[in-house]
Length: 232
Image (cartoon, rainbow, N blue to C red):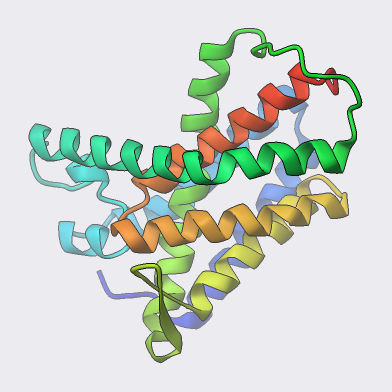
């Protein structure tokens, strides 16, 4: 499958962003997230996953061979999963402690937290992984960031072992704007900063697996903090 042109990438991104916004406002809350996830996955499949194994691996969507058209390589998949979890855990160890103090400073909850997990935590965790993190990372880091970086290869720099450039920044910005459009509040633009980390993980590891796991971990952390500080 030929690499999409920059015009096609832009058109697909606009259409998907408009569609996700419309679904977020037009459907009941209980169904909106699933519908938006389906839109992201459908767009990614149409643009990337219908190709051969090389095309899929080029945009980081192989997931250890799970998405390749060839027979499932169980050992490679297990190794890819272990690597993804290891990278995500490393990022969590570095990022989560300062995030905790930043969270307290921003929200000023006052009282000490009473640590608690959201109701149905396992279901929530699975939903964050498969319905939120996977579709968003597949589209924004697999399709959008990978496609833009291929078109702007000379505008790239090495950042802690990852080759990053304008495509990384643009994909993170589109991710943030999309979040603000679905919930109209300027605070939503703050997801630009974790998006930079997700994009760095995609570039550093060569795939989206670590970004998916870390994305889900970040979302779960914010849910746990909100519950523990009595903000929800």
